[in-house]
Length: 92
Image (cartoon, rainbow, N blue to C red):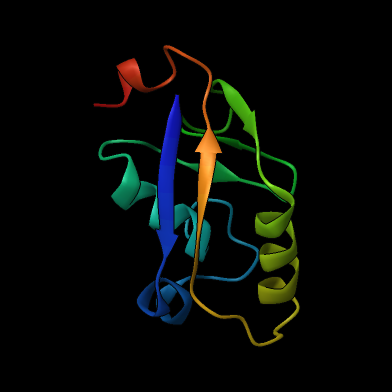
């Protein structure tokens, strides 16, 4: 299943660097997938907490996370995330 995720200027302003569940990507995921509990790293993410079903994140997202965590300027952007079938069933 494909989910469209938009990282906004507000997500960037309120997101926490190096915080797996409060970074801008996690905030955007919470909006894109209501009820999810995201856990985001530079390689994988889970929508159901740290030990939930995982999906690989696109390279552009990894680069954004590294730049944001390093304190470099970042801009709002959007990406599509391919999530394994059945992952969203327990989040909504």
